[in-house]
Image 1 (cartoon, helix red, strand yellow):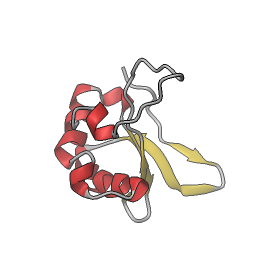
Image 2: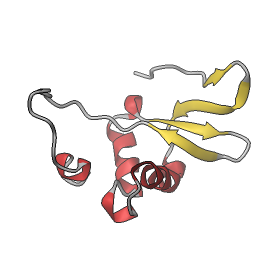
Image 3: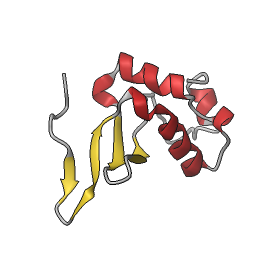
Length: 100
């Protein structure tokens, strides 16, 4: 199932679109995640993991793409977990996901 077929754009700015991710953007996804979490590449998903997530669950992988620069400026990474707000998650994301 594909969530949608057309890129979603903001009416006043067609430079950024939200589209399903593609394997060719995996290295850029690593860069974005490192920038967002102020971490090193070995502390987050690797490009191979982004590609694997796309293969396993393509409907849930999206990127925000600056179409003028062909550059990833945002992404989604999600995982369903049982969450109890009375018990905060104290481990790092990479530990929660068993390193991807």
